[in-house]
Image 1: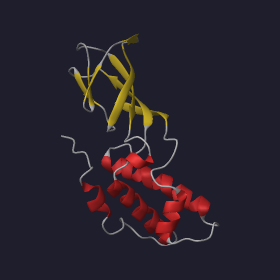
Image 2: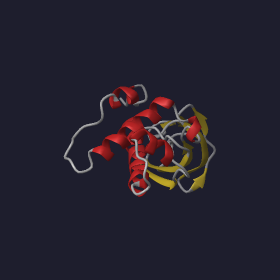
Image 3: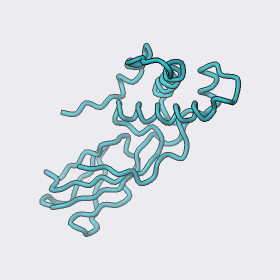
Length: 165
């Protein structure tokens, strides 16, 4: 199973102004750093939760999928754009965060889909808070060798982590 990013988010869940206010930064000389930290924090939160925060398009490629139900790796799934099996277009049905294939026994499968909550205002507030806490932690500890995450970070994202069996 391999995932490819087709189109990343056009904006971040929090703005530069929101992050600067949270970090208590008044000057503009740290804007590039804070902007980079926002993107890195989003990627980290997405990695820890298995969720796309902002709408983005992905391609999932599978060799020999087992069964007719294919769980998509990033949630929440907004829509399936296209699906091909053995180099031919197929119709699939979106069921929650999984795709139902029309049959079994395909050698290769490719599914293009969009995932995410939508825009910045659609992202749950506790995930935005976790992102801001991480930006502030990294900003304050950029010269240190601090390990771990800011206090409360794990609790903020705990309810959003995907458990895979």
